[in-house]
Length: 58
Image 1 (cartoon, one colour):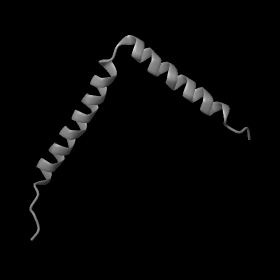
Image 2 (cartoon, one colour):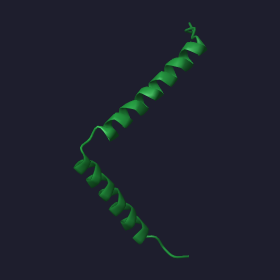
Image 3 (cartoon, helix red, strand yellow):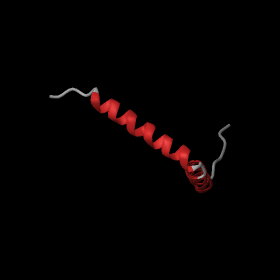
């Protein structure tokens, strides 16, 4: 048999799950110490610079 699903409830649950995952990511990003945040930012900048260095000129 097919299970009956209330579409409104399913949509609300999907939205709640999405907001919860965004909140967890935000809490992790803002909850870390400044030296760790600075280190992560520096690593991201170095990675971006390294990637740009490998690009070909057209």
